[in-house]
Image (tube, rainbow, N blue to C red):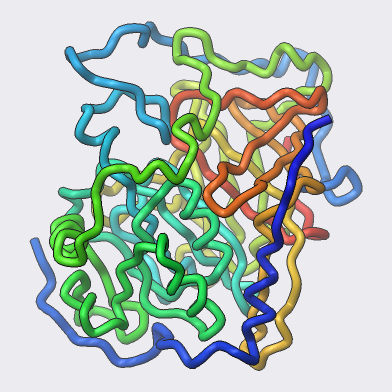
Length: 385
């Protein structure tokens, strides 16, 4: 049995009566010129169809396409040493109709989604190769649980303010953030005129790089995190989940609308390239592809992790909630290549990686490529078939 010491995110709730007021993303900011785990009784699954097989995309990636390239710790793709050695950014992005369309989201290596107050969802995009991105966002306020997940990657945390109970977390010596509502950091952001506040704040790679340099932050990893965050399978020898036999369920359609009722997002597996494509609302009651306005690309992922997570309501007027990021008692599902298996997960320290295990207690291997992490409130339901 794995021995784990774990802490609880809900320390943020204990600060409710001691923290001082923080800026929220509804506050005024400058308008700068725009530049160029689910338990078995909480899940509905379709019956496996005999003979319902999918194509597995493989390719020989044993050698780098260019001399000197190394493996990404985020995706296992081949990247330049400069990219691999540069700390990522973690950008807080709203996911509601007024915030659409998103810019730069398809360029993220890892994407988290979790509910905030009012059953709205907010995303945290982890970007590895970020310094040349021209427009990212829009950007909104931080919640404590996103900060703990960003710590796993030693990422620069990019946000527009937040509720007062994040203050102590942001003030910790190791937390390195760029806050668009801090007057000193405002040069890293710009507002557009096509939307009203707070939906019109954006950032860019060059602006962030400049501000990071001004603040004296190191672009190099600080040794606070585990270098091998995920276990990866190669493209030449992918994890097909066939080793789990009947425990691997058919999963060519994943519906998380029961977890995110306002965005009603779902994923469809594409056999031709082995990716899950994301769909959600566009306007009104219309559903459609979730696309990046900067590239025109639909968001697509090689791996999808659904992480059932304990949460509590903090009892404030704004209906804030808190997820327990540090835990070893909850479960979830892992989906890849049109299949899914039940998993458990654990996170034992602020900068420690969240790790996922199969029902044999072995750490799972993710496939090379991008990963979507759906944080699900304990008790919510989703379905797949």
